[in-house]
Amino acid sequence: MQKEIRKNLSQDDWVKIYSIVQQRITIQENDETMFCPLGALLMEHGFNTEIENIDFSESNNMRFVLFDNMTFRSCKFSEIDFSNSIFHDVALFDCEFDKILLCNTSFYRCIFNDCEFLGIGFSGVIVVTTNFIRCDFKLCSWVNAQIERVHFSHVEMKEEGISHAMIRDTVFFYSELSYSCWNQTKLINVFMLKGNLVGASFFENSVEKSYLIEVDLTDCLLFDKGFYTDRAELPVLNKPIIGMTWNFLDQGLCTPLIANVLRERGACVLKIDMESAGIAVEQLANEVANGIAHAQNSGDSRMSIPENLLAKCSPESVIGLVKKRARSALAICHALVLPGGKDIQHEFYGATRKDGPEFDGDYRRSITEFSLYFCARELEMPVMGICRGAQTINVYHGGSLRQPIDSVHKGKNFQYLTLTESCWKERMQVLFAQESPVAWTAHHQGIVCHGEFLEPVLECSGVPKLLISKDGMVIASQVHPEACLMAGISISEAAKKTSKILFDLFLNKVSQFFHKK
Image (cartoon, rainbow, N blue to C red; front, side):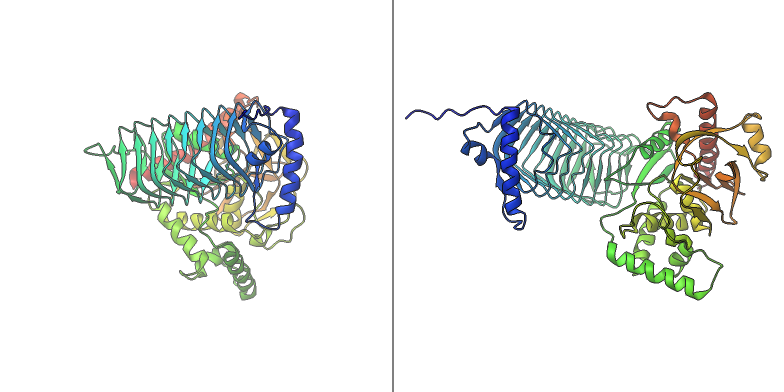
């Protein structure tokens, strides 16, 4: 019998096949148990299931697709939604994956060889009996992932964020895992062999029958004793640990730069999930609404709205559990950093919304950061807030924000700053050697009224840009001192000097607290 000859898929052929895929998906979109079988569809139209040199970047909807018994070579996948799709017996060689969406996607018996993954959230994925060989992961995260019988060999997973994951019967061999984070992840029978875990952190983990063999553990934050190692003793950590809130699904541009500065200056960074998957979002929203209403009706002006919420929450409430976890995290830290991000919800400072995107009802970040700051003040540890972080500190102390700020402040630019008449003025004049401070700024809201605990030190056209507590333990910087590391921006010597001064002020306090503790 003559063997059927199938055509190789071309870029133009794929455009036609993709239109058929969309028709199938549209028919199936009301039945999430049905999948469009791409391999069978290709064979039905006379094409090979071995695909080479195809750019799938215009194929943005690949939800509920079954990839079965297929091979991809030198293909590009960019900004595609693969949510709820299944990859079964699929081999991928030298492929690029850029900002694709893998929500509740499943991989069974797959092989990834020499592939690159950029900015991908492996959210809720299931990966079983799969090999990743010589793959490079950049700015990726694994949240609520289930990983079982997976072999990672010679992979680059630096700064990888792994949170609320389950990893079982899995091997990491000769892999770069430095500064990776394994928050609230369960590891069972996991082997890490001949790799690099420099600066990695394992916080609130459950570890069973797992091994670290010939692995560099320099500055590794191992808080769980469940690992077996080939060392008689683990390395002694003699550096301050700075807790820093982190969004594992979208870490942004500036937050990693802050972490890099802190490490370069001799600290270890413990990433604390600012939007933990373990928090009940709807229940938290109800508690916040009820707590704010109670605070406003009580007429008690001695505490701000965030302080009132945290002081009066029950231990069993969602807010209470967030506060408990914050206290647990800071118990092993010597300082706290709150980085930039989206606007703070206006209800926390008693305002009404005037501008900006609609609120999605998710208070996890705000309550997490208010809780961490609440606990940091209890512990009297140094705190630095940058951009949104500065506003968080200000709002906690009863301050308010202007929304939106004037156009002179809005956007991303360098600004000349002036010293205010504060108790810090003389010291700042010495530090800046009588020169005008310059700093990079990028914010939508601005501090208009500040809490009594904070004192404005630097301003621009009347808008506070740097606030410091009188004891210097709390620094609220509306400007971005980490911008000196930002690629593509020309940084003046004056701006570099401002950055150094601000980090020096904070890290000197961190050093004092570390040696005292």
